[in-house]
Length: 262
Image (cartoon, rainbow, N blue to C red):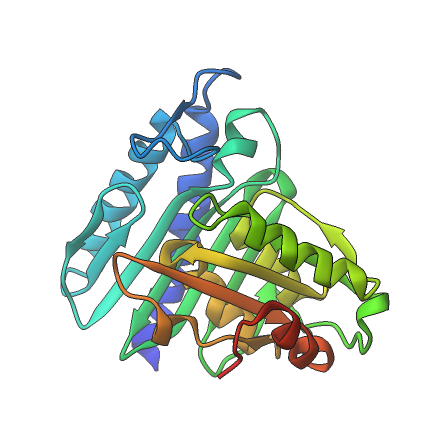
């Protein structure tokens, strides 16, 4: 597993360098634009493209045999192992001057998440994880929460313009009906990482893309969270639902949301 260890070290360094680049390129509030698909709240900044190009080039130099997939350019290098990158997750927060955004670098292979690096510079957070080797936040081990009841839980319900609002609203009502406290943070990657760290109890979204979760999946698994089988349901171009939760409330949330834990 030395090769994965080397890759995680590089991914962690590059996530921090990319986050610093994003800060330098941060637009003035109001300068971000909607993506060409025209989906509401799907934002794009100049920094997104620049950071993705930087990561693609640096990962190619370090590991020329690996594939690469980025949010903005799509799948553009094949390989048995594939880096999956979200250059800026939480772009709306980023573009509006908020702090809750991150750079996400994941590595997938053989249908599973192998390692992940997530850097949220303005929150002073660096999540790292490698399959079978645990997960850390700023170097300290993390674990999912031991919360056993939904009426004591904090749950983030992510919204996607790719699913009807009525479905999202119905899910929110079901979760609220069990007494859970709702949260919405504007970054799916960080919402999932918070579940791994035990600072919130669950994250659920009816549609999310691979680049949003590739790094977080292994962080969650290594932190002991229950997670729906995302990679088995999604492909390189499409998304899927996701549920990540503290183990003791996962089954109940699965029943409420209709998202199978596999």
